[in-house]
Image (cartoon, rainbow over the protein chains, first blue to last red):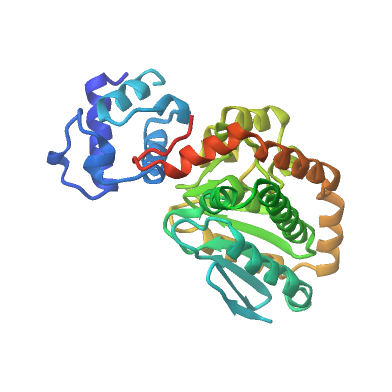
Length: 80
Length: 267
């Protein structure tokens, strides 16, 4: 089972690759909308990647109001 | 007309396959422009059918297949028009788009929706008129309408009920959550899942296989296995039009349209 830290790191790795930003520029407490420069539709494409990577289903309403990587990782962690 | 290039959609007939492309920025929102061009297509379809065996509907935009109904245009109509006339306009729009969707659903051609990315609301409903859905790994399906106090209005519920188990229909509709492509294939919505960017190629491959079949047999089989729920489709129009008359719905639409943050108002 992954630790919360591992989950967070993997999310940051995936986000950096998908949106072509330097991995070292991302931290767990970043607002991913701002940091990645994405809108809600693009955030859904990140959600799709994360669901595939972690092999989980994450209903949209669980992400309501979530905008930082750390909280996103917490939500995923509960479904691993 | 074997080819057409519009502002929202274009089509071309090549080797017996009609390819209908969606290309209205930002994400193929379906408003009056889209509808008038779709009606142009459905009017041309009987003559196209004589030289074709398959129809592929796809999007050329990176965001996905379609984000669905043009809520901004819809809200603008409500905001700037006297209420009775606005509601009459909404009814007319829904009746017209239902007629067009019914033509797509009933065509004797074998139809394939080639989808990727966002397949939401009206975009999902357009895909549901097709016989097959071929999706790449980025595809995401959703009916978010209940989050704004409405229901899908372009034939989504009757077609979902026709094609899927009722528990899945309830999950999609009553939670408003989106399904990724793995889930969509598990529940029987998607027939083929392919790599990112490969949906159109896979749809073309399927269409070329269909060319080997006798057309009249394929058409007869389709008529037998794909009933069109006309009565429920008409009921849907009535329910949707009643909902749009509610002040709460109009307030929710206003909040959605006027959202300026990265996450629009969607309760």
